[in-house]
Amino acid sequence: MTFAVIKTGGKQYKVSANDTIRIEKIDNEAGKKFDFKEVLLTADNTTTEIGSPMIDGAYVEAELLKQARNDKVIIFKKRRRQNSRRKRGHRQHVSIVKILKIYGKSGKLLSEAKNITLEKQTSEKKTETEVTAKK
Image (tube, rainbow, N blue to C red):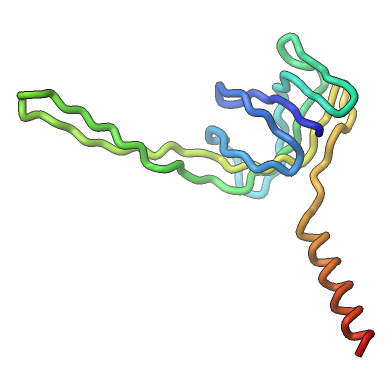
């Protein structure tokens, strides 16, 4: 199984091709493709590349699916015996991203996401033609 560890928004994520992840908000439009240049580690079935701290030439290609917000976090503060309380809520902005390709050292393609919707459509068409051919 091929995967990479990327760094974005002050956090690290272990990603594989065709994964969908929620990350800190990225200023971009939905449907745009972009690259994560900060790759800390890449691994496939045979080799593992570890950066110090980043791997030169490695990057992960991704597509921004949509901008969203996380679930509400309630902040409740109470001072006992003071009749003082405060309740606030917060929803963090996030970006939902799909990982398309993982490139290793010097731009070598390690893994690529398969387009599942196309495969399903072609298999459905094949079954429809087989059914009509049998009639």
